[in-house]
Amino acid sequence: KAGVTQTPRYLIKTRGQQVTLSCSPISGHRSVSWYQQTPGQGLQFLFEYFSETQRNKGNFPGRFSGRQFSNSRSEMNVSTLELGDSALYLCASSKPGTGPYNEQFFGPGTRLTVL
Amino acid sequence: DQQVKQNSPSLSVQEGRISILNCDYTNSMFDYFLWYKKYPAEGPTFLISISSIKDKNEDGRFTVFLNKSAKHLSLHIVPSQPGDSAVYFCAATQDTYSGAGSYQLTFGKGTKLSVIP
Image (cartoon, rainbow over all chains, first blue to last red; front, side):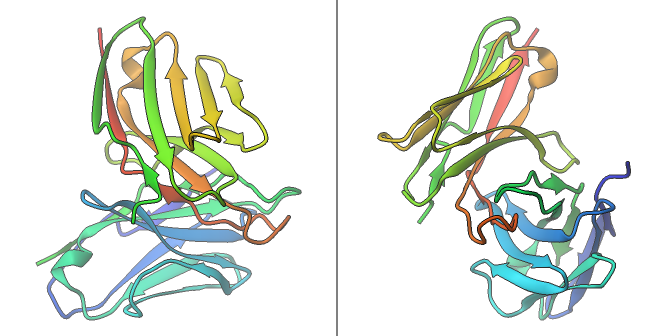
C-alpha cells in the first residue's frame, strides 16, 4: 500500500512570493491534516480537511490556506512568504473509523526555504 | 503557551539498557496521547498511544505510562537498540468530533534519542 506522498520535496522561494504544496493521502483515507515543523516551535497543527471541508484550524495567519479535492488529495498555499515560513511542512492522512482516534500516517514532508 | 512539553532535547543510552523519555502536558482536556518516532528526512511514524482511561499500554519493547494527576507521561524502551536512535515526539489530543475520527495533534518539541552500541 503506497504511503502518503508530498510534492515537491524541496522548494526555495523568496520573500513575498507564494507557494503551493501538494499531498496525496493513502488510498481510502479521507482526512488530511497539515503540520509545520520548525526547530524553535516543533510540530504545529495548521488545518485538517475531510470530504473537501476544513474541520479544524490551528493558530496560523490567513496567509496559510488549504483545500481538499474530491479524490481526497490536498493542497496548502502560503501567500506573501516571510523568512519565518521556512520550515518542513508535513501532511498526514487518516481513515475515519469507529472511534474518535485514528492513527495519522505522515508523509516525508516538503522542505520550504524562504530567502 | 506550550501545552505539551518535552524538557529533555536529547538523551543518550547504552544499547541494551532502558530508555525513558518524558512528557508533560498542561491542558486537562487532552484525553488521548501518542508517541511518534522520526528519522531524518522522513515523516513521523506512529509508535504507541494511550487513552486517558488507562495508565499503561505496552507494545513489545515499548511501554507508555500515564499519570493523569501529574499530567505526565513517559515512554520506556527496553531493551534499547541502535535502530531506536531517532527523535521522539510526544503528542496529545482531545476528541473534537466524537466518533468521526477528527482530531488535531498538539506535539512536544521532541527528544533526540541516541542509543550507543
